[in-house]
Image 1 (spheres, helix red, strand yellow):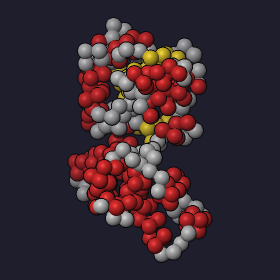
Image 2 (cartoon, one colour):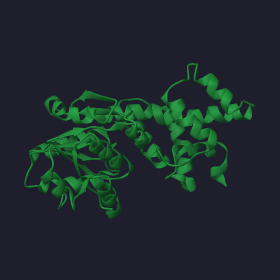
Image 3 (cartoon, one colour):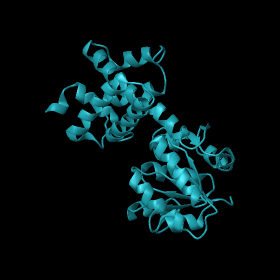
Image 4 (cartoon, helix red, strand yellow):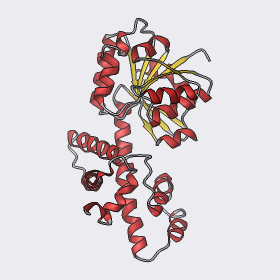
Length: 292
């Protein structure tokens, strides 16, 4: 394929997405501050580079998926950021989960530099990239979206255009509001069932055929049953994302009671030192183990 793609941020999600693009025949460049992640990209057929600037100079579409706003700032406007590239004939696709107004402002600032941007966060954890069951929500100019959509559609089950810049980020927060709170509720459900004498097999058999059936049940319940805390969606990420949901709601005159109560449980898990563990670890907060 003629398009050259690049990823800034080769963490679990960034590397999984790069691998998926490589499988679809694209040339994929990558940059990360961790040399080990660059080696991992090279091992799967990607092309590591030394900076975001170098990546932008080689690519038609530059993707970014990072944890913090300061990381994005450094890789866009920093000394070796994409705005310093001699060639600016690329589209920037920011896939990190960030606040909507921040993403919209970033797109405005980049447009001054003659760089068009889409905010395109993902619904689904990195294992879901491997089986192509993620969804991507995209905000930005429609004509820019149309140029990038075929690439996104090659790695996702669903790609949704949500409107102008910032709306993709808004949709991600709304999605996470449900997902994060339901993780806590599922933990409560499992514990009540266990303490009342139900077997895990009985619970899953009944829940799968009732009104609780769905992706959250299938993904989270087995991890809660087995107390499997290997990270897919980390506790600290849930705390961050639910905080953004609470802020967005307050800005729109809404007081989120359920989300606040759920976030308190994940905050206790984080305080107990479990921030890097899977969100399923919240069940041990309910069991009183965070207080030991």
